[in-house]
Length: 191
Ligand code: GRF
Image 1 (cartoon, rainbow, N blue to C red):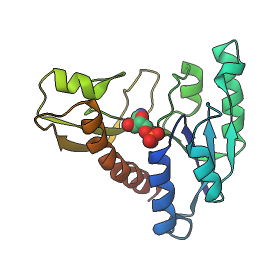
Image 2 (tube, rainbow, N blue to C red; image 1 turned 180 degrees about the vertical axis):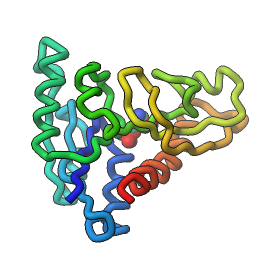
Image 3 (cartoon, rainbow, N blue to C red; image 1 turned 60 degrees about the vertical axis):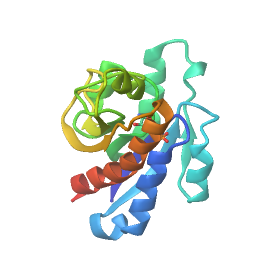
Image 4 (cartoon, rainbow, N blue to C red; image 1 turned 120 degrees about the vertical axis):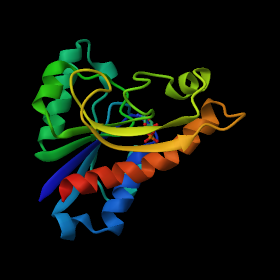
């Protein structure tokens, strides 16, 4: 069985989209794949309760309880590796991970970023796209490398930036597309 571990920090709407797709499309039967754990660095992440309600094991590795970044990375790595994952999926996971950590999962760690990479790496992507006068915005699924928001692009979705858009309206439009491309990119890899 190919194990998939999902890392979240908040509401985990992408995580929910992936788990819904896995169930609806029966990834267990068709790809011999299963989401084995959802791990959060924030105890208050609302996505945890939803994952539990779906019968998926959850775990918290609270970054605030560590003084050293390396210690956090190592504990998180142990929690993930307990599930022997083929894929580690960052879904709104809001911690920057160390180079050793990233190297350990080279080629099998994915992220979704709310911009059309390579444009607008980092934070506040929607406001920056609006401020730059972009007519289109979007989201990118990519493999994770030690460089923030870099790595092979696996999927992208484009949405228009509409007159009168603000950060929230644009983010909401992009998010609906994220929920489609993230499960699709994972499915393509499992195949
Ligand atoms: C998404 O916009 C994702 O692209 C970014 O963080 C947000 C997380 O949303 N990395 P959610 O937690 O999946 O709802």
